[in-house]
Image 1 (cartoon, one colour):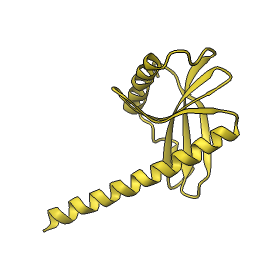
Image 2: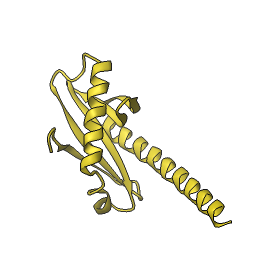
Image 3: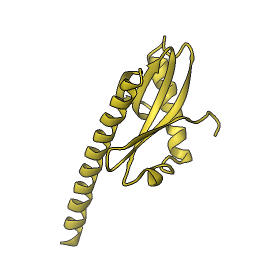
Length: 130
């Protein structure tokens, strides 16, 4: 009986988290567009994993991880080394499949979205080898 409850609870929690993530990605994409960025891809799937947003401005390509958390301070530490490595590998796959972008370089950004809809972008949040 409890196993069924636990599975249902996890499923509902997962659905809420996915909906929250989609909302946060929409907020982040809108903020990027207001800043002059062109969003090239949302939830870009690659063999190495998914990239939340891929955006470009003036030839600079940004691979963006979006984090939704109750507060901005909680979200600031939400991207660990394993997730960074996955994002780098996914970016390499995306670049191989989408040549001709990033003539001015590339970087990895994190956009943090708080529960109240406040968004903050950490430009160049990490570099290769971090």
